[in-house]
Image 1 (cartoon, one colour):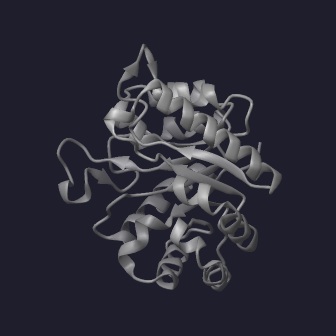
Image 2 (cartoon, rainbow, N blue to C red; image 1 turned 90 degrees about the vertical axis):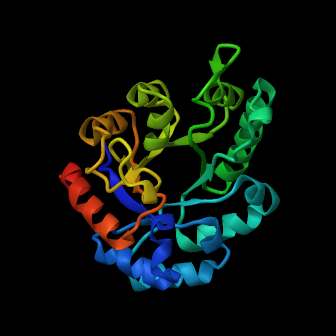
Length: 254
């Protein structure tokens, strides 16, 4: 089994300044890998240089669904230039009126088709969840299930944001096991206890919240996840979040 890799989602570091500063602080916190965003891929030369300057790699990145559909070749070239092998599309957030069986099936078909195209370019395409698709059933089925059923036969993968999943479902570990055949990556973040950290949207440094990360980590590894991306959606102290979370999680890499 390949040893899991720990990465840092650059969205968590946006409060520190420009890309160069974010990358420098990520490396200082202990990380050897980062996960850039769509905007970073739009200046691939700057990203590539910043990674090299700080001894970092970027095995994965996030890109919006609409941008990928409209500018696929641009992002393929950026990934190839920067050594990025996995692209994850965050949930495109259809409103409640659009959360229908047909909408989830169309999303699955479109993402599956894009995944097939990107595979030919040597890139894995995956879906990154939030709570949508897990909060209510549609005819007894969850939207997430309908989407991957529609994408069946395609190489579409899943980057499981376990904290968002846990906000919607009490059995996040069971979903990871059920979808082990498409699980490629995990977002690692933590939920603050009770009403804690309201100015941080209820998130916490990894290891200081309520999620049982030792068991969730083991379940994700057993289900085939190899890339673990640390994230906090709204950290008050980005560098401290990154460093403390790395210190906590690095024990799982031994």
